[in-house]
Image 1 (cartoon, rainbow, N blue to C red):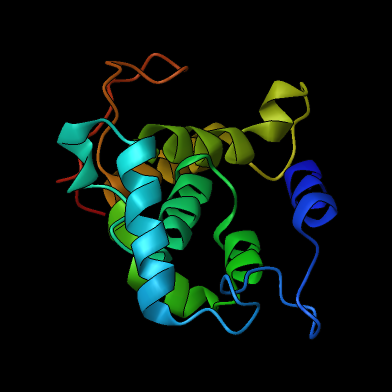
Image 2 (tube, helix red, strand yellow):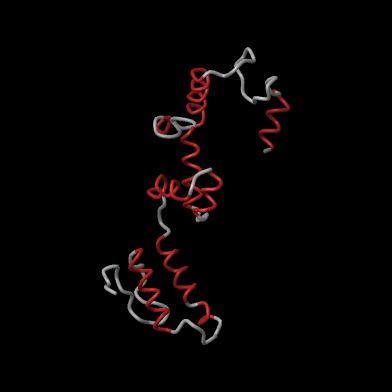
Length: 161
């Protein structure tokens, strides 16, 4: 926000409130806008990346949404911030999510074993927790560790239920 405030203090806004305008104060047409965009890219990126990164301004939105998802922000929150439904978000960006499988499986195991960790004998018995862990693994594939926290071998994604 500080960068935006500084820009407004230095350059002001157009009479109709727009931040960016042509040199004559009018609307910024797409040709002039893209010329400025491409010039900024040549300044910002090393030569070998200019052709690859942020070819269009819209690419920044895609990069931001992908970053949010890969940072572990829940899909419903990302969808709201991006102005999408969760279904559209996942249809468009699911292929961009990398490296979270093991964390997700562990979260499921942790959720199923919460009572066990607290030392309570509650609704989740050891077999049910282990079955939940196997189900999580079958949905997302086996994790790399050889044993569960209970010492039983992990079952691969090919396990049948």
